[in-house]
Structure formats: C-alpha cells, structure tokens
Length: 81
Image 1 (cartoon, helix red, strand yellow):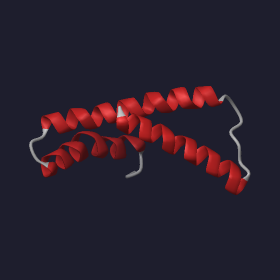
Image 2 (tube, rainbow, N blue to C red):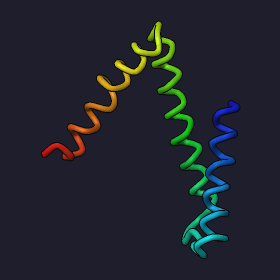
Image 3 (cartoon, rainbow, N blue to C red):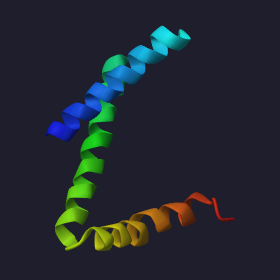
Image 4 (tube, one colour):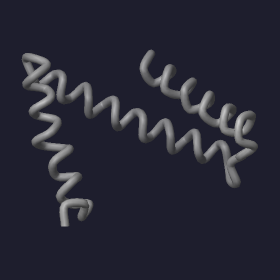
C-alpha cells in the first residue's frame, strides 16, 4: 500500500507541475485518469511482488523480469523489426 500511495502522489505532482510549469492541463476526466493510474499501478506492483516471491536473489529477479516480461514486450512491440 505505501508504494501505491507514493505513486499516486507522484501522479498528482506530475499533473500539477505540468499545469504550473508548462500551462498544460488534461483534457478529459481527471477521475478516469486516476482510476486508470490506480489500475496500472496495482498491476505493476503486483507483478513486482510476484517476481520477488519467485526469486531468491536480486539477480535472479532481474533475470526473471527480463526473460519473461521485458524481452517479450520488445519482440511483440515490433521495435526489433
């Protein structure tokens, strides 16, 4: 929970700083933006928690993440081709 709260604070800081520094404001629903941000943050934090429970060391966790998540994302995005 603390990481989710910290992440929401960061989302709020980014939105406020984009408005104050650059004069950009979100065209659309702020509520929808926060709901989708919470959904993204919880799935990402859950994925990190899953990897950390499967791995015994930090190096193993990094290898699991690269092999099962980063590598397929790169290949499926079309970046290589």
